Amino acid sequence: MNTIVCIKRVPDSATRVKIGPGRTGLDPAGVKFVVNPYDEFALEEAIRRREAAGSGTVTVIALGPAGTGEALRQALAMGADDAVHLVSDGSHDGLVVAKALAAEIREREFDLVLFGKQAIDDDNMQVPQMVAELLDLPCATVVVGLEIDGARAVAHREVEGGHETVEMSLPAVIAAQKGLNEPRYPNLKGIMAAKKKPLEEKPVDLEASSLELVSLEEPPAPAAGRVVGEGPDAVPELVAALREEAGVL
Amino acid sequence: MANVLAVVEIRGGEATKAARETVSAARAVAGGLGGAVHVVAVGGPGTGAGAETLAANGADRICVAESPDLELYQPDVVAGVVAGLAGDGGYGAAMFAATAQGKDLAPRVAARLDRPLATEVVAVSADGGQITVRRPMYAGKAIATLRFGAAPALMTLRANVFAPTEAAGAGEVEDLEVGTVEPRARVTAFEAGDRDQLDVSEASIIVSGGRGMQDPENWHLLEALVDALGAEATLGASRAVVDAGWRPHAEQVGQTGKTVSPNLYFAVGISGAIQHLAGMRTAKTIVAINRDAEAPIFGVADYGVVGDLFEILPRLTEEVRKARASG
Ligand SMILES: Cc1cc2nc3c(=O)[nH]c(=O)nc-3n(C[C@H](O)[C@H](O)[C@H](O)COP(=O)(O)OP(=O)(O)OC[C@H]3O[C@@H](n4cnc5c(N)ncnc54)[C@H](O)[C@@H]3O)c2cc1C
Ligand SMILES: Nc1ncnc2c1ncn2[C@@H]1O[C@H](COP(=O)(O)O)[C@@H](O)[C@H]1O
Image (cartoon, rainbow over all chains, first blue to last red; front, side, top):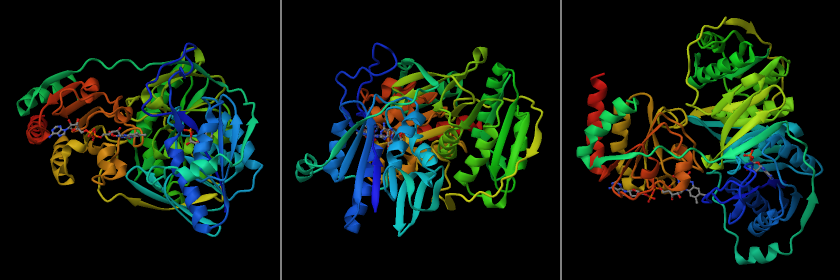
């Protein structure tokens, strides 16, 4: 089975967000970049399946600016076989990104395309479904369990108040949620091996978006809260404030 | 003049709260565009009856695709119906709720219509016929303003942000043909979670516990508070307690859990790590209970009580019960 995993390089979740001078992007100075955490579940799933089968390949694709290669090397160190870097500044518009990824995927032979459910920078949560539509493939999102038997796949999705079971035939698109597996850390051997694995760089021109990013702002500072008091004796005042001031009880 | 399409979910024959929020937001945008509000609901038997009640929130036309085969959410079928309608022309915007279903569906519709999608929108304006939205990025650490340059403007609306409003719509009902679509993927089952509990993404009050609870056996203290707070309340959790296996992942709030905007959020024995704040900082009122007065959670809390949660919780439950009983 050949699997393609789409990964995005994103700022680490603990990064302090500083908006850059143009007010349409982050100031990249001092930002630590990592593989999008949800994409690690997708990668782990692909690698485990190849290991269990003893055959097949795992190809990682990332669209992003110079520097994205590091995230791809990390994926190769975890155990992916080869990588493609679509060199581009990216876009806030998920459809534009999905089109570029779909164009690359369409050229390949594959049984499964794995994504993370969401990139933690733009929080768009849309690229996997869009790629599936563009390629006319079945798709399940927010997947916490996946069974594959021959050309049939059964995915378990997390939804409000429960789980959904989705059946489809391969090739298919799956977007991973936390809980699908426990991603490994690359070991030294993996890191050494990754240096010799193929990483292809392809410049891409993205389509223009009709959705204009006008500006990015810091969120309003939360109104200064107050400590009502200490210990259980503060409780009556708290409850009174919730009823009368906040009007939420 | 352009109409606005609200894509809604009907569950068990009733419009969800998210459906009412979506129709109300669509009403406001339709006002700006000088158009009408159309609703589309796709689902099993009872969908039409539930959708008709949305006239009370301002729906002028209610398009219903109802079939016993659609008892479970079938993404390919629903996307086909909604894209068929939304692409029909004349819509200035199509709005979805950012529920599990809306989040899965909207990107599929966007790809079929070849239009961009803004997800988890928290504000919409239609001044001068131009649709502009605001949405959080970087887990709420930045707010983006986006302007649509092509119709229909597609968006999902964050839960609990747009208040349901009453407005009399014409409520004209139209039945849609589902047609015969062979879905690429088929949803074959839905299993409800073990507890008959409201999901954190839907509840208007959340009581979240963290590592300060010390032992999963102590959760009855939080359950008692949830019970006292009524049917709109539910339990949440920090990642620390989910990773420890004390609570299910479905309850996790934060960067790698769910993003919530309830009216009232209690953080009990939760330190307030940046990844936790990412999931709940937009709650309207935040209450923190923590014995460490320096805990970062107090930086975002509207009301804080410093002290031992084991002493504070029983008292809080009792006072809440009294307050609610007195009406
Ligand atoms: C990539 C990434 C993603 C993450 N995603 C999430 C996420 O989605 N959600 C999330 O929550 N975290 C997330 N985290 C983890 C986060 O960084 C914190 O580790 C976690 O939120 C801490 O949980 P906690 O507040 O329950 O525990 P702690 O930080 O240990 O805090 C426990 C608190 O309880 C208080 N306490 C102890 N005993 C008592 C008592 N008797 N009475 C009153 N107070 C008491 C303490 O003072 C302390 O403040 C993520 C981390 C990373 C790196
Ligand atoms: N620039 C990108 N390059 C490769 N994969 C991406 C990119 N952007 C998004 N993805 C994939 O799509 C998923 C969802 O992203 P998003 O829709 O942006 O939240 C991510 O978890 C990745 O798997």
